Length: 322
Image (cartoon, rainbow, N blue to C red; front, side, top):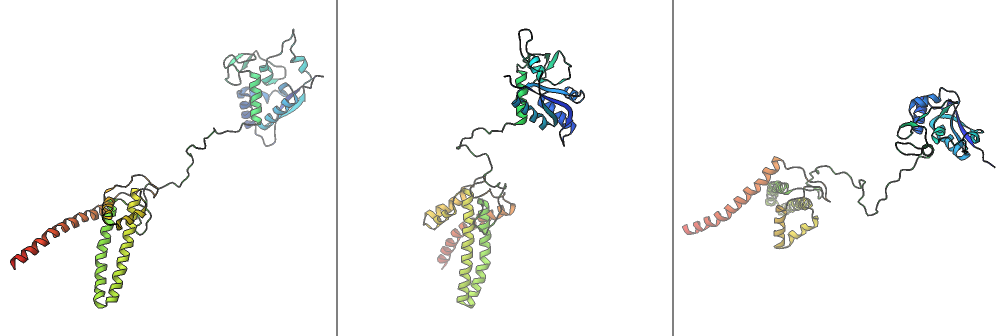
């Protein structure tokens, strides 16, 4: 027994909450057609959108068109066996004829390809892009009903992650002298050391003054100032090692005889990394005050060398005079 065939019928009505312009645009995208042909669907009364469908195919078209906003209905197509069954005297009509919207009994001898828009006589395939028009329209209806999921390409588990897995670092780090976090460069290490030394002179002077009054009080103040200087020195030393990319625990090498002197020299000589490292972003550019304070070390070295030469010479001259 021949299975029943169905058709999709449209009389220009819209689904609830559907706007006319949005529905026309949806139908134009669905059928890959222009708005002129879509407008004819709303002005020619009852129109057979699609004919000679199985019940499953008709249900798919029904859901797709209703999702687009058109209030269509499914009816049994009693004339399908008369118009769409191929015989020797009457070949089957072109799928393009059944796929394109028809209004009443009107027909044309030309068709527009729903994919590329090529104008040609009605045929099974488009002579320009080669698609089978019936299958293309059916595929578009199915895609409108069940949009394909976007599947990301296979990603190797060993590939470098594309997402941001760490916080975005600023261009330059903050300067915090009283902490072991952060980084400072060579000139700023010299400048901060000079500031610490200049600050120690009056502090030790005050402690020495109290030492004249009370040895216990003076000794206690000298110990407090010495510990404070040691702690601040360790903090800025660790930040200097961070700038090179080394751990702050290497500062303990300065306690080793000979090796400590060489390591301290390396801290003054080795430049820091210009980019961010595991200890944070690079320090900000050196200010004029930092450069001036760093140059004071040169003056101290020159004065020290001069004193080392002049003092023994003066003492020898004084002894010779006596």
